Structures are given as structure tokens and as C-alpha cells.
Length: 161
Image 1 (cartoon, rainbow, N blue to C red):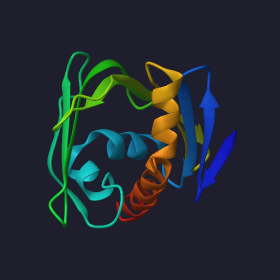
Image 2 (image 1 turned 45 degrees about the horizontal axis):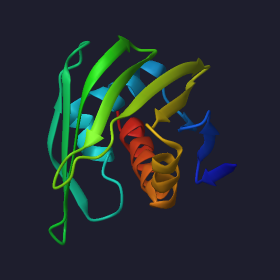
Image 3 (image 1 turned 90 degrees about the horizontal axis):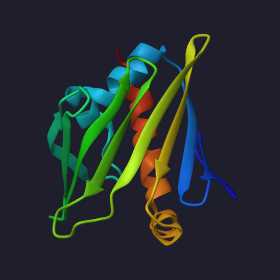
């Protein structure tokens, strides 16, 4: 099953994962920065229109913590926290993460792999969930629409640098 959303392609990865691939018109180091620097993340990692990220904490080291807090124009809140488990700048990183505001979601493993493609960067985001049911629920939640909306914003951030 392959889903195409804008410039992103989403495919099944093993029994419990997905892989999102997308190309950005920027060098790998810039894409890595956009994925790890709070001042850049707060400009693009927002999901649907009307959301902001008032809190963005990234301690970019193995064992370092991640905390993202989003708020919508109509008062909804969402928070994600995690821990870096591997970093190979600017080639990518892995982190264990979970949504944890009002509910404790299942832990998922996120791995970003960045490959040079001339003047562009091929991004591969692998997300592995604890079960197939959780993976399928995430796919049905509209998550892929929010990801593509955010990645389109990331294009704009990269163009402005």
C-alpha cells in the first residue's frame, strides 16, 4: 500500500511501521538542521493550519530529551516527548517518542535517514509502532496529511535560509 500526499510517499514498513520519503531542494546539513533546531522546527512542524508550537526543546545528544508542545487556535493542545537513541549528523538520527498530554500514547521509534542527491536531499522517515493496529490507526487518523502540510512548510523554511 503506497499513499502519495503532495511530495511525500508513505509506504508500509514491515509488520508495524511506515516509511515516509520526500525530497527537499536543500543540502543534507540544512535538512538536518531543520529537523533538529528548535528555532526552525517551530516554523514548520505545525501540522494542520491554525496550530503553533509554543514549546520546542531539543537536547541533541544520545540520551537527550525532546519535547514539543502544540496549541491550536481553538484551544486544543498536544504534546510529544522523546529521547534520542542515535545521532549521526548530518546523516540522520533515531528517537523513541510518544504523545503525552491528557493521555499517554504508545511509544514509537522514529528514524530519519538523509541522503545527498546532488543539490537535493532524500529524506526517509521510518516510524515503527508497537503493534500493527496502532500503526493502522495512525494512518487512518489523518497523520499523513498533517505530515505533508508540515513538510511543505519545511520547504519554505529551507528556501528562506
